[in-house]
Length: 76
Image 1 (cartoon, helix red, strand yellow):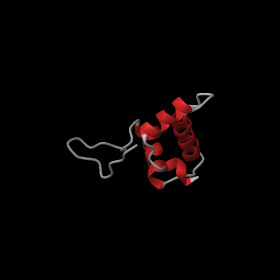
Image 2 (image 1 turned 135 degrees about the vertical axis):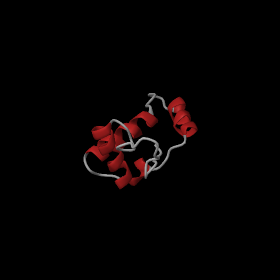
Image 3 (image 1 turned 60 degrees about the vertical axis):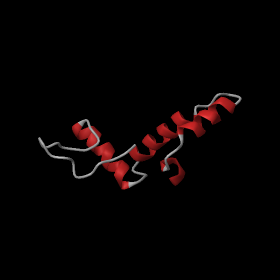
Image 4 (image 1 turned 30 degrees about the vertical axis):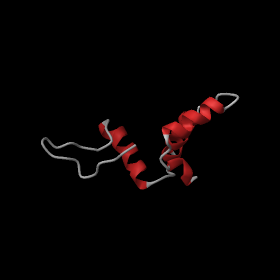
């Protein structure tokens, strides 16, 4: 299952979609699978923390303090 948390190249998934005879959007499927796994408690701790922050603070980084940079900066 760890493969779904690896960064996917946009070009690779676009090429896969263009060559797929039934036009499965692999990028979209992987993103939805990542969300579903994190919601079930499966996945990297960083992803779990981001989801918690989004639910609680409506952003990835958590509580903001005016003029301060968040302690942890995440990437998609």
